[in-house]
Amino acid sequence: MLRLAAVLAGLGVLAFLTITVGLDTLVDGVRAVGWLAIPIVGLHAIVYALNAIAWWLTLSPEPGAPPFRSIFKISLVGFAINFLTPVVNAGGEPYRIAALTPWIGTRRAAGSVLQYAMLHALSSLLMWLTAIVAALTLTSVDGALRVGLIAAGVVIGAALVVVQLGHRHGFVARSTAWLARRPLGRASTWLAARAEGFAAMDSQLATMHTDHPARLALAVGVDYLSRWVAMGELLLVAHGLGISISVLSAVMISGLSALAVNVFFLLPWEMGSREGSLFLLFGLAGVPASVGMIAAVLTRLREIVWCGIGLLLAGRANIPRRTPAP
Image (cartoon, rainbow, N blue to C red; front, side):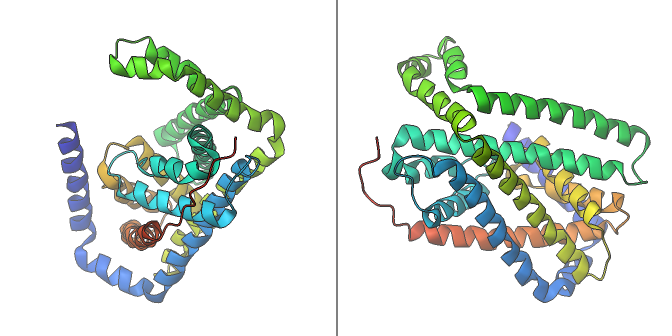
């Protein structure tokens, strides 16, 4: 029932925004961007490469770790599967674990995927904070909106500390032990029987902090950089429409739109949350709000292209059958 309500809410927002902007305006806008759709799609080759580099930086110290080209392929296929997952966008993580297992074993593969997920979360939180700071520099942001953004910044800052502590000291063993003590039937038994493996995953997370702190910091920085590169597609859309928009405004729009999508994570395929946030944020930046809807359409098209590339790579996957390193 909740899922149906989320679908209807997303469709309602999409219908409202499409009627407000006008279907002709959207079609004309996409046509005006024209050939710039090619660099918009190409830009994400850099984004996905930076994401893969960040993961590779944390994974390469592991004995038997795969080469970067394999990490890039696994990462890209994982993103494609996440795109096809209606809610939460986490369907690609089991694939990444399975694809990585022949090289380093299931337990260390799961630890590596979890480690990158936390690293990715850190860079997300940093980008959201950057976007809030950028928004607070705009004269159009005042009153209750300014107070709300400051409050959100405090919450995100606290979340950043929590994720950082979890990454440094581990949280898997404690979390699963707590769940194992709950009356969850077979799930509790399954979790309790794997306590040793979960403790090993915690140790794997903490080792990166103690043994390779500089490498970890570089990985977070590279993943954070990927978000700045991704923001470039908004500049390209605006340029294609003959509209001037500052880098600061683009950072604000990109970061706060991503935050809104995560807040409304129950909406399948980010339906309505992305379009609505871009519509409102472009308007807040002093740009015609319709540009936000045009950007949303082109973003969807870009995602479909890269999803197709990822699925094509999945069909051509060549994962070696080998004994994982101990």
